[in-house]
Every structure is written in C-alpha cells, then in structure tokens.
Length: 486
Ligand SMILES: *Cc1c(COP(=O)(O)O)cnc(C)c1O
Image (cartoon, rainbow, N blue to C red; front, side):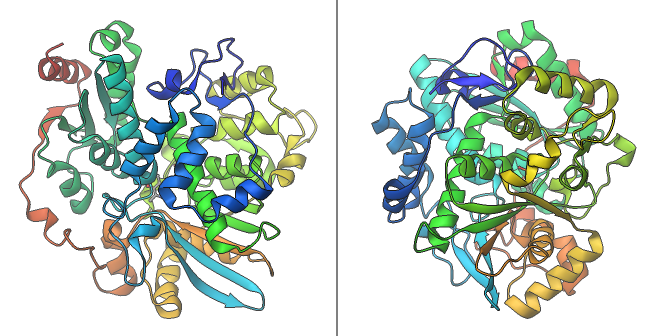
C-alpha cells in the first residue's frame, strides 16, 4: 500500500515511511492511493473476531510493509481488557468498545459505543495507545530515538503521555497553559513520574503553547539535531486505528451485512469522523455519518451550506465541550480530496485560499469555487449543532431516561443523533469521554459530582511533576536540549 498527498506531491511513501511524520512535504495530508475493500464473506468473518484480531485485520491492509506477525503482536499488546478497563457497570472490558442500547421505539434505535475506557478516559486513547507501541517498534528497528514536542489544552496531551510513558527511545515534552487546565486534567498529566515524560507549564494561554511548538517545528536545523517529532491528529496511523472501531460498532450492532447503521460523532478536528468516512469508502454499510459540533460550528456550517469558513480567534468560543473548540478542522482536507474526485490541484488551490481568504465555497452558487456540495449526500454526511443549554438538558435527560451520566462532548453527540434517527437504521453515537473529566459541567447539570472509575478517586492529591516556564520558545528549546543531551 502506497500513500499519496492530498496536494499531489510526487512521492508515494509506505506506511512505515509516514508513521513518524505529519504533513506531506507539500503541506498536504496523506491518504492511501486506493481504499482496500472489505465486503461479503470477509466482513462476515470479522464479525467473530476479538477487538485485537479485528484491529490486526484492518491494520494489515494499510501497513503492508510491517511483517504480519509483528503487527498482530502490536495489536494484541494494545487492545487488552487491562488497558481499556475503565468500564461502567454492565460493560465488559474485553469488548474494548462496548455497546449499550439507549432507546428503541417505533423501529428507531439509539446505541452508545464507549470509546473512553482507556487510561485517560477519552477516545484519543483508542489510537494513541497503538501509536505508542508502533513508535517504539519502529524506532527500535531503526535504532533511532524521537523527542515528541506538543501543545495541549487537555485530552491530547494526556493521551500522548499515557501512550508514550516508559517507551524506549521516546521522550515527550508537553506544553500546557499554566493553571488553565481542569484540576483533573492537570493531575492526570502532572502526576506521571516516568523519567521520559516532561510537563512544561507555560505562563500563557493555549495559543502561546501552540506558537512555541510551531516555532520549534519551523526551525528545521534544530528539529533535525534534536530529533523532534509530533503526534497531532493528522497523523495517518491515528486515523487508521480509529477505522477499527467503526467496523467493530457496525459488526456488534448488526447480525447480517444487509443491515445498515449510522454514526453520530462529536467532532472538532474531523479526525474521528474522517475514520468513519474511510470505513464507509472501504465498503462498510454505513448509512449516515452525522457530524455533531458545539457552538464552534465551522463543520456544521459546511455540511449545511457547502461553505467552509474558518473562524478567527475572537470567533472561537471556549465552551463546556472544550475538546471540540476549534477554528478550523485539520483533517477536513482528507474528505475534501475525496469529495473533489481526488483532484489534488484543486485541493491545493482551495486550501491555499483557506490561508489567504479564510475559506472556500462549494455551494454551486454564482462565482463560488465549485458545486461539489451537491455530492456530499452521496458520502452519507449530515450534521447538527449543540449549545451549552443543550448539553445541560441532554446530560439531565440521559440520566433520567437512560440511567447513565454522559460527558459534555457525548451529550452534544446524543442531542444531534436524536435529530437524525431513521426507522430500521441503528444510530450509534460515539462516546468520546467519560464524565469524570468534565466534572464542572456535570455539577452544573446534575448538582452532584460525576462518578470516577476506580483508581482515579484521589488523583488530585498525588505528587505532581512539572516545570513552570515563560512563553519563550528559546527557553523551551534550551530545556529540550538539556534533557535530551542532544
Ligand atoms: C478530541 C476530542 C473530540 C474531537 O475529535 P476530533 O477527532 O478532533 O474531531 C471530541 N470529544 C473529545 C472528548 C475529544 O477529546
């Protein structure tokens, strides 16, 4: 399997060649040259597999340059009941992503797929845990080392640290805004005592952290000398790992391949639902892929109108579903590439226009950039939006009607999913975090604290390890140099 850049760069690297990298050299994103197809008898066989074996079957279609025995061992090391142990009562950890029926009425069925039972209680563990093992494997083979520098406002940083902790050949330097994360998120990251994990609390806001990471990434000489890498959501291996749970959700919710299901996905950078799009392109019988956004509705706007208009900082709201607070969706280019019939020259033009003019318009109206909005429906996409008031109401509704507490992001998903129920098609809403992570809003909605999984009871009381630092790229560079010895 070879990979192509959405912007048409001539090279066609293999899976291993893009594993440790991010963007293609031309600024595009990588996609497989063609989507492997899974239908009929093969899909039926997959129905019986454990999660780890299913992950192996999906991975081997994309990572054709990794020996199959190695890939299988990596999948089995990653997807264990012990790693994904933070289940609710009634869920079986061995299922990795257990399903639960929320409501069933008049042929309409709503099901929750738990993706948040991993070490950091958010769906990012599903991919990041695999990435940690793949990175360690690839680095050991090359006799190489990697220093990951990242910025986080919460979920991504903790998922990366828990995936990379104790891994040979890898160090993580994670920048976060000093005193701006929730107490729970801070404790999750800062209580790690592993010597290869470095928490840098930057005196500034999240954007300052991100600017420092960009400055380091743009200093090519430094980057090469210090062996700097990233783990952001455009990483192709992360997307592939996410494809697996769409197959799993479909197979667990159906008994025959004649049946269709839909998915509703709480979305920010479009990484999660992009994996759903890829599963659908591989032949998985998905009816609708419903994008759920919060008040930061750049994606909902596109799927309603065909106009992609990125937001300025002043128009990007801090909401109670903070992991969906985005101004532009970094994985969206992958879908647009398919929507435009893989015309990389047009993709390049459109995303250049995003930089220079703040967006593009595919609505088909006079003077716009194209009419492909009319084809969006063929790809199954639909969308909806949810607000703080909707979240509170949905959290209360879920407690009363379903008997479970859901987090704020999942509440956005449930709210939008219920607007898209169709008789005869099971709707699966993806649970992207557990409520303990966003306790402030649970208290506001329910007047009590969210339950915490075993082992997290006193996490705020654990000793914390972090370094406070001014928002100064030079200081961060010096710190990294000192602690890598490079
Ligand atoms: C990252 C995240 C999202 C958004 O996922 P994308 O892949 O960026 O669309 C939604 N919910 C939670 C809890 C997250 O951590």
